[in-house]
Amino acid sequence: MKKLLSVALAAMMAMPMMAQKESSATLRMNDAKYKINKEIYGQFAEHLGTCIYGGLWVGPDSKIANTDGYRNDVLQALKDIRVPVLRWPGGCFADEYHWMDGVGPKENRPRMVNNNWGGTVEDNSFGTHEFLNLCEMLGCEPYVSMNVGSGTVEETAKWVEYMTAKDGPMAKLRKQNGREKPWTVKYIGVGNESWGCGGSMRPEYYGDLYRRYSTYCREYSGNKLYKVASGASDYDYDWTETIMKNVGDRMKGLSLHYYTCYTWNGSKGSATNFNNDQYYWAVAKCGVGVKEILDKHVAIMDKYDPKGKVDLLLDEWGTWWDSEPGSIEGHLYQQNAMRDAMVAAFSLNTFHQYTKRMKMTNIAQIANVLQSMVLTKDDKMVLTPTYYVFKMYRDNMEAVNIPIDVTCDYFAAENERDKNNQRVSPYISASASKMSDGTVVMNLANADLTQSNKLTINLGNVKGKVVDATILTSKDMKDHNTFENPDKVKPAEFKGAKIKGNQLVVDMPKMSIVVLKIK
Ligand code: AHR
Image (cartoon, rainbow, N blue to C red; front, side, top):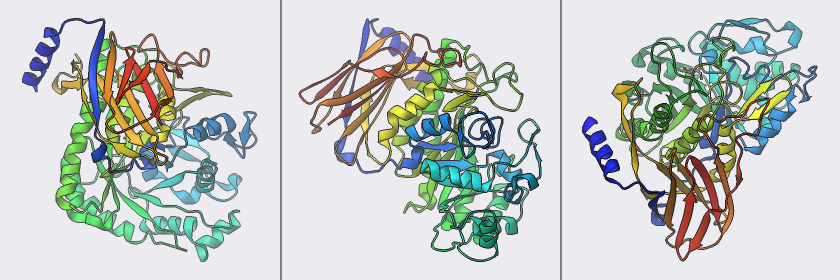
């Protein structure tokens, strides 16, 4: 790695300093085969800090404008990014959650201590009905994580029956609690991080538990389940290997978690106060870094499952910085700057390349936790730079990925905090897709903090005009939206793209994300 780094650095230093860099790319239309499942744009909502209580849910009696208890401002924001799937109730919380405590009359629901996240006492007013009804309002698929760590097989079996059966004792209870029709629930997670907060298990033991718990997740009334096994973290290839070997296609999906974070001397670094090295390190960690682990986990899956029956689900990803000063320890409330937007763009561009095997990802988390879409405080809400990337990218959902080859300069991601993890990353990240009406979407990001880049893209046989162009940029990588200044970072119309013959020429400003549509 060191050698690669010095070669890249030498190459960079040999290049004359230009006012504007130049780079090129080619669309590989002949290799456009795999659909970008809408679930690649999935979200995650855990009972953690103010993600659920305060973020999504304020209750019907709140003074904050709401519909049946859900905040109106947040609902609208989430509808605008067309959330395709929402994972709940955790995370670590899932393996201590007993669903029966969260159904029935609110006044009878017991209070509980959220042991994983700050010891906050919750009143269980947001439970199964509140979650599944929210999914219906958003028009998204629910993804429910079952409690394997501290729950029972019976509890799991009854939860599936409660949510999805038309008749029988659990359906009767659901009807008594106000819901006549079963919900449609496709995605079922059998445990979460079972190697850690989900039970500290060895993969062999968890594999057996998966087989046992999933056996009793029955399909009722025509509801088809897509069962997901708890997967590895980051570089734990042994977990993937063992689960693939011992569980095989008894699971439909195998999860994986990967965060853009690094803890050094007890700190992950500030979300809004960081230096250039830390910025470049984050971009490389989420781009070439995630690519490296996806390649390795996919190779293991290919070995055991060459026919591709089991999907990979990156059901937790995103940036993880120090919590905001003054916020409650354990609530993981962090700000979201232009750096996070760049992480989102580089990550999504990378995910598009893996959709042959990877069918879902869930950014952590939807509100007020880690790399969130929205931040709320009392009746105020701000949209984060990451939110805007999801909005700009939303038309990639269900479009066919067009592989794209990019030739550009590289940077060496050195970080005084993480010397053993040096990476070399391109400045430019790009992906493209073809929508069902033929529109081609180009997703481009220039991570360079000092130089703009003239990117010339060979469009091959793609014909048309630039019909829509949006840019997200700001003066400084640390810029972010606050309750006092909510519009500091927001998208704007982009005028720097032209088609000349079969070439698209894009003048990418420094530190910018551009999405173009050609039709
Ligand atoms: O997203 C926060 C936590 O990160 C989740 O609860 C857990 O699964 C992971 O370690």
